[in-house]
Amino acid sequence: FREAAAARAPAMAAVQQNMAVVVTPMGLFLQQPSLQMPVATPVLAPQALQGAPSTIGCAGAGLAGAPSSVLLLAAVQSLYRDRLEPYGRILRKRLSEISSAAGQGTLDISTKELRAQCEASPWLEVKDACPVDGGADWAALLPGVPPMFVNIYSPEDPYPAELWAAAAGYFSGPAGRGLSLPGGRYACAQVLMTRQLPFLAGRTLGEICHIVQLSISLKKLLGYQNGAVVPYAKSQSMVKERCAERCRPVTAGRRNRIATWDMLRTCVQEMINRLAPGEDLIPLSNIKRTFRSQFHIELSETALGYAKLSE
Image (cartoon, rainbow, N blue to C red):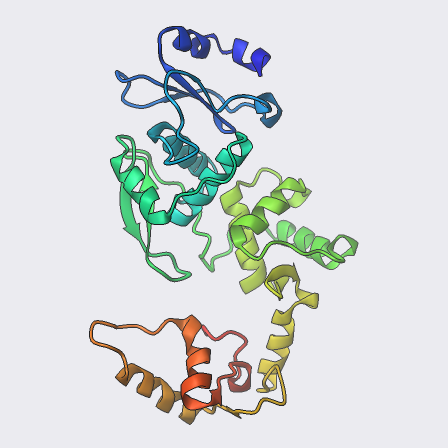
């Protein structure tokens, strides 16, 4: 760390001038009241930060409690470099990663508290957002910086055929045997990036998140099994696809009746009629449970010819 810091004389001189130098895995950030925005140096190698303190100088980074504006900016800038839109939940993950890497443990802050911190930051602009995967969210953006984010929910495939051929060979070949990846796109993409796979070389984390999404939803290279992402041939996703082709439920022997299309329409209409004043939606995640508890009917999407309830 000392060698890396010595190569950046302006940062060390800043300490002598009573500036704060915040050290994160994303680089060095200088903070001074007269500056409109912290100055970021080129990213340091992770090994250069091992054993380094989270801050040098007068101002703390606030890792133990609420993150400082400088740390928030560092996290948002890192997501911009990854081409990932800084939604609240993703920003919270990134801050925890920075906190852990700095030896401060997991950052304990709610999404509501984090939004308040972002709104108070002089360098960030908070906007409401509605990701495709459901649920209201918000994003912390850099004013005046053109967004170059990857839409990881887009069904469009901008990647070359060579990439997909190599991906298919990897996931279906010997390397895919016993492969079990985290269930979330973000965490799954991070693991794949650490494997330094040739067909993902040069891709940002945002692009790899999109590739994971397309591998599951479009290319049928990956699927889910007990909450983990696995090669499609070993996934529950493949079983559901085959059951949907035959219009059969995945699990036989259920005590409740299996919903038909007429039963589905009737029950959904009844659920809508029961909505309390002010409610205008029914969470998709609650529908199957409601069918069982209120109507004693098993809602099986595969029995209706679909592999996903959302379809």
